[in-house]
Length: 178
Length: 178
Image (cartoon, rainbow over all chains, first blue to last red; front, side, top):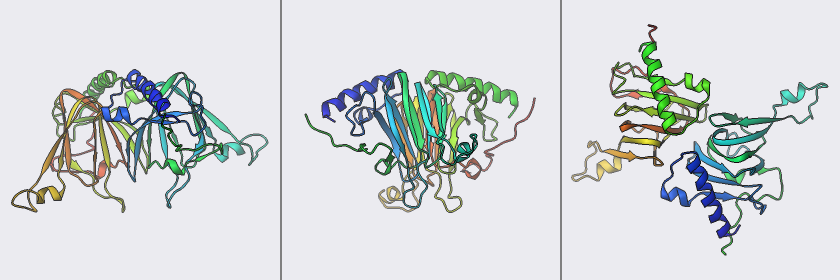
């Protein structure tokens, strides 16, 4: 992504923090991460992220999604003998649709039972609603027509370890100066 | 505390969630914890808490402090071979003053150096400002004149293990029906 595109998306993200009534320091306003996952289609597949804290033990972030913007499907694998990242998403403003792979028991409860049937749940989160993902669950999410502000509470975040379903994705792409 | 006093404090806390623009579900509105620490002086020593999530690995809460209300000094000891609870406090609305014991190195840097000098820091947090406490740090905090709404991001919360400086404190007091 070009530096100018990143700056534009950061400024746009700030409007969403304002809409949600979330105050940021000046330093935070300048360090909003803009992720296009190397797909060069930020409007549809992308995420704006402000990490408040990320230690060896826990992490908290604010996620901004522009209208209709989606974070592509991925999962957080175990790292260094620790189970995968555990995440709670809490919608603060707008609305977000979260899609998660069902538990194997749900796949077995279809008729006829099948170990191979993939069950996917859609979870619709409005302001004040939240959902906790078990470690290792494949998931993706997409904002509604207004966009969304979502708090993420989790264990340590290791973005570089994330496994995306789309093999074209680069989680931490290079920034091009323009 | 009497059930009626708890209900009154819950309703008062809801005003602060509104001031901060934080949306809650109906279930959450009814489950705000009101803690007077068994001191029977909620106006001055107390805390209103909404726990969003608390798993074996991480925890997120919203803390409400009425004007001038303080959460008494305490620390979170190691439990089950885990270091003590690690906490980040982020002010969302109003202002809060956080008092923490300094690191031993600070006590050693006074002149003359002393291992026994107790150094305490005052950290003033306004909306958008935050502070992370290392495990095992003694701390207390108090709202400014407007009250405060503070997000807490942490490792697992085990209130029953907290060690308070005031021996009269009962962290989880009984509720009296009235």
